[in-house]
Length: 452
Image (cartoon, rainbow, N blue to C red; front, top):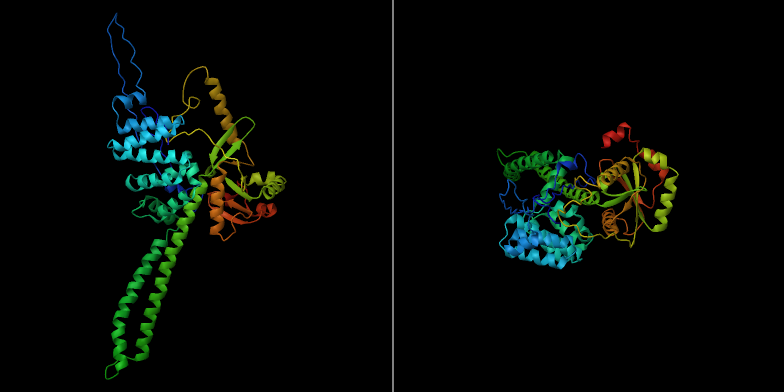
């Protein structure tokens, strides 16, 4: 949720689900979750021109959202005012404005904005059930992209709740209650990763139809062979043909359903790893800290478990630091039960850029230039460790992964990702770094280039 910038569309959210894969990659980039423009703020400029000594007065500034809503309340003005309230932390007032917008005959775009931003307010207040209800309406009736829910930082508390997991499972299944957009997008990624699955299923159906037609004509011949008499076909030959046809149908039907099952597993993995790709981490130097998503990291190695186990694994990794860096490894420790929570001021969906990041000319130009240079150095610097943000989201994802792999939730595990974002492998306990060095190629090696 956010305060819309003047005369600018609210920010689009790009996905990806990027997918059973994990972090967006050439495969996952085929899918782009783009949230529609939620609303534009029409800044009505009232300028009065007075001719006096060949000079004119400057135009008056645009009215604020509060004055605009008071003068002529519309769905759009109420949404904009609600966004401004939310950005100031006035969540209750924001909810009231979004409700007002829904009562003023909004168009589909305005209604989508109102329901989605209501969900962000409820997520901020940790009212997960109400947030899920608003999102269902926005997804089903107003074509909200599920990737928006996955991307928006204001939805972080909701993504750590059981209601989000339930909503995600509904989106995976598709249907009238939540819409089929998310599932359709995931199926596109699945088809890219397994391009011949559709061809195989086509041939399965064709062969099943051919075997069925053959069986249809064979059964009467078999009955005639059983009755015997002049001109009756050979019983053993006819029975053999019927058995081959029926056996072929059984095998082909089994293969068809097996392909469907594999597709569902793949879609589930794509969705799970798409969620993983959007988990935030903090990269730091002595001068600056930057928040990035996991998909922006080359080869993450996640170490999850108790504090003692993770700390010991990190200490052992220091002995191999140089060789691990040559392989693009970035360690991400996740300590179960961590109570530290990063809380910030709500930004809202489509927040206006801060003055520090907006282009301007003034006394702070040198400071902004220095900040940009520091960020560039941070990206260029070789880093060995990243700190997680929103531990509850990380723990929720890891526990889901453990359940899918048959591992007891809460047990020490490690997860190694490929350069293309997919999970390379995972295991119980902490990794053997000697084995990791033997397994992972250096970044400049051909295998690493093929892995991207």
